[in-house]
Length: 209
Image (spheres, rainbow, N blue to C red):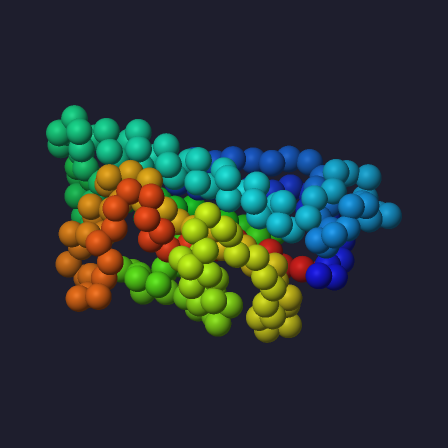
């Protein structure tokens, strides 16, 4: 791949209701390039390294929310529960996937973020999570057929070339797979998910100069 150097002065991202801030100067270069650009004296990372880093933070926050908030409330038989229609209730909080999507929407609104992210699935219960491009469809198929591997590629949307990373989105907490398995929107061919099954993919998209 022949990426040009790109400098990001500051990256903000909010995931699962928690905010993480990376402050400093990051110089992103193409894969295979190990030297910083002449206009930057900051540390150099590749688009893949950048995507891997933000994905690690996203999934850490999401796992903590799903395991230590949503699942614990259920075990404690709390009156407060995670519910898809939490906005219509005084005793409900968002589902992990909804928290994740709200964080992605905040990042999408921040033009200085330098990247976007989203959930995608071959079995979406919410149409917003359907694959939107041919590359996204290819990525979802790849992570299902190649357990333990991530998908990396590039695609052109409009006039912009993007680096795209898609990571397996696994069922990490009981609240995740029971919600999907019991959901009224699931079709006849919908999988019966269990712990650690790949339920979809986490997509990170980075515009390249």
